[in-house]
Image (cartoon, rainbow, N blue to C red; front, side, top):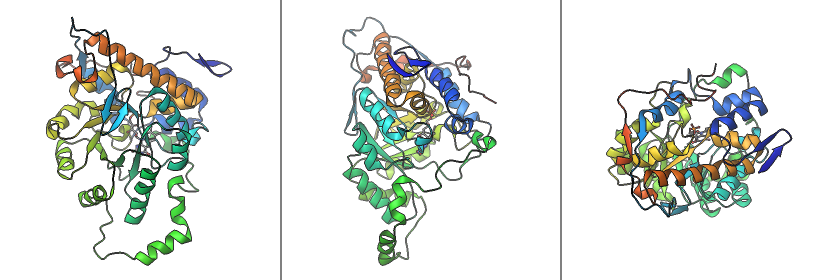
Length: 380
Ligand SMILES: Cc1cc2nc3c(=O)[nH]c(=O)nc-3n(C[C@H](O)[C@H](O)[C@H](O)COP(=O)(O)O)c2cc1C
């Protein structure tokens, strides 16, 4: 049992993701909590992410030898004890002083994957030194190719095993946080980018000059350029449409993450689980398809894997776990998730992750609302 503070203990196996978010709500200033948990607009996409799992039911197969259940996977050369990763979440020091390093340590202890946000409170090198989980590096597109190239080079040097380019940004949506008047503490700059403000760096950029045909927008052309300079697998995060998934395969990327940024950008889009099958169909098995958005429990993970996802990510629940007590609670929560997934595979009659098939899940015609949507949805 991990004692994390005087009046609250993390009990292994004893907490749901919502319990942790409830506790985080008690601990965090209201603006910070609103940032962690809130979505765009009226939060319909945020709700759809959760509710989408309510459209599926798991179907156990019986009389299968499940004496040994193996949840491990290898995704694009990264070995994981279970097909779970912590989604990239930025500026996390406002939640807990252990910040992204705490999440990295928790993920390493649980044997799951960790994707570091481009907007991390500490540099990618510091996080890599604090813990060595199976780690990938998320980046946003920046108009300066020299900065992009340097960021991924730094990531490779620090042992990040894949680059995840988030492509679903643009306008940042009006979110719940606005009503609280809270502003994100990024005034003194994003840790990973600080060095690019130095005069030494600026003169390097000036010396190079800009090519007349430099295209500085986030475009498929620049995805292809990024692919040509990275030496590790490149994934695109933020795909929700089948044509984009097909285009990603054509652009030569190594994987995609079906994601709508946890419903934080567009209000009115589908839940990610609702579009997963169509996207898998479009991709046709050519590259691994991962997913995040609304995943809270092992049965959600089993549904996504049965439909054909290679792995699933969790964002806000992991941040809430961090808020509750740093790396110890993150690892406790993730270890419970892995143990629950192992149990779920056993009950479903799947001795390993590859043993989960489309036959293990059925889509129900009549939508049944998830009665466990938690205390936050809709939370007004
Ligand atoms: C507090 C917070 C910060 C986030 N920051 C980033 C980020 O820097 N980069 C990114 O690609 N996604 C970011 N996301 C989105 C997550 O990576 C992920 O797509 C989303 O949280 C998944 O949905 P879930 O919260 O329902 O698990 C953030 C999410 C949260 C909750």
